[in-house]
Each structure stands twice: as structure tokens, then as C-alpha cells.
Amino acid sequence: MTPKRLSILLGMLAVAVLLVVGLLQLGAKTATTAPLLETVAQMRRSLSGSPEPLAALHEQASEVLSGGLPALRARLAEFRDRPTVINKWASWCEPCKAEFGAFQRVSLSRGRSVAFLGIDSGDSSRSAALRFLRSYPVSYPSFYDPSGQLGLAITDSTFTPVTVFYNRSGSEFIHQGPYTSVAKLEADVRRYALDG
Image (tube, rainbow, N blue to C red):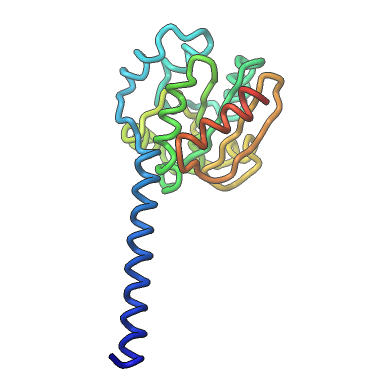
């Protein structure tokens, strides 16, 4: 075999190995963040008996709320002294889609003690947000933010996704970028919302 052919063969083998490794990593991430495919009704049943005001959140599971910053601030006031997680997302955001399975799982496992809220930021229509939430249902509502100004005011960022954690004393931690696994999101909920 000539050196040129050997070089081409080794290059093709390296590309094949990289492709296989990439596919395996993608499969691992998908397995840890894929939605549970529960319905909103199943989520409400799973979280029934939650204390107020968390029960009110679960009643609005996967709804898109209006009212902007004043409405969100009023809702946050209800959760004073309670751990709270706010996830800024958009229906066109691929990393948001990738992390919604993690938010679905963690909001179900922690929904009796932690308040979860969403901000649908930068979607041009409410119907796009509702279609997204039919495919990726969660146990909490999201505030509609077509201009992106609400998301910017809360997350101090124009990017999506962004997650904000508040602990019982009101301290804030902002995480830029998607959560690639349930374990990473769960760890940050414990670290920044529950233990912080």
C-alpha cells in the first residue's frame, strides 16, 4: 500500500471513529433529557396535594400567560421565602428543546417544594409557544415575552436558554446555556435554590 493510500485510509478511519463517538454522545444526552411524554393531566395528578401557591402553578401547567414584567414580579412575590427556578426559552431554540426533558423531570420530582416558571422569550406568536408546549409539556406556566424585554430584565441576558435560581433568602444565580442532563439540573436546583 502506498503512503498516500495509507494516509487516506487512516483519515477515513479517523472520521468514522469521530462520527461513532459523536453519535454515542448524542444518544447519551438524548436519553437523559428526552421528555417523559406525560400529559398535563398526568403531571397535575402527580403533583396533586402540593402546598399553595405551588398548586396554583401546577393548575396552569404548560399555559402561556400574559402580563409581562409586572405579572411575573407579582407571581414571584407569592414565592418569597420559597426556592424558585425560572427558565427562559423559545420555541425556535434547539438547545431549549434539548433541555426541556430535564425541566419536565426535575419540575415533577421537585414541584412540591420548588416553584418553577418559564419565560417564552422572543417568540413572534403565542401559537408557536403553545405548539411547543404541546410537544414538550411541563408542570408549570410560562410568561409570554415576544419582545425579549421580560427575559432580559429577569436573566440579564439576550440569549436562550438561561435559567435563574432563587433560594429562600432571595439570592440569585444565573446559568447561561442548556442543561444537558437531568442530573446537572437537579444538582443546580439543590445547590442554588435549596441549599443556597
